[in-house]
Length: 243
Image 1 (tube, rainbow, N blue to C red):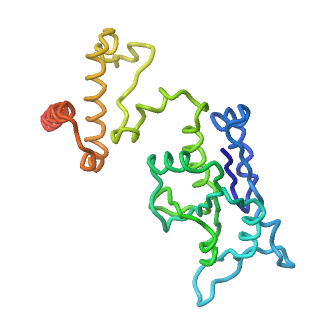
Image 2 (image 1 turned 90 degrees about the vertical axis):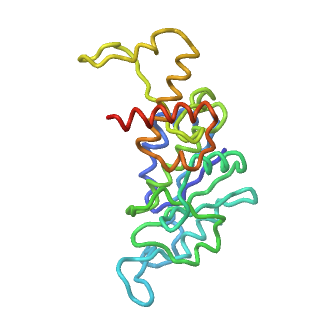
Image 3 (image 1 turned 30 degrees about the horizontal axis):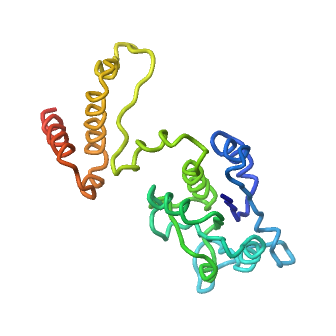
């Protein structure tokens, strides 16, 4: 997979591309990353990339020309172009899977300042938001999307590491523990030390349902629960109401 990021601040990605899972994917040759400096494409004699909005308003708006020329310099017939913007559908794990499954060449556009000239959208395939809040620019949002996509590329991490994670099956991931068994009087649930695989599976499923019930009831409303899950959820609801 190839992920190209168009940005006014390519230096923001230097550490990102050379850390953790991103670095691993790069050195294994599984994902190619590039950060393209949009400013280097401006035709403005003062090297500007933005100006005040027509009709008045606060802040500065990015010119279409530098971004579009930067896009044309890297886009191919296989490219899928995405503008990072809060005025868009929210990015989800389902969308991450969709992008990795369908595209091998993804280009992420990062606006900055107050926003971008709306005509830029005529050159993109879709828009994505990472949440209902405003960032200084699209760079950190592009990092979020890049990280989420990279983890799903085959060979980057083991498949077993992703199957039971939050959102993969419509529920939040169950709590997890490691050594020591007793930390300041807080003890790992005994059943996890039992070695009884079926009991552990049921315990983890129930705790996954519990966490989802506590923090993201909206996920439960969207999910078609199995009979087993419904029984466990009823137990969870009863236990939570008794607290």
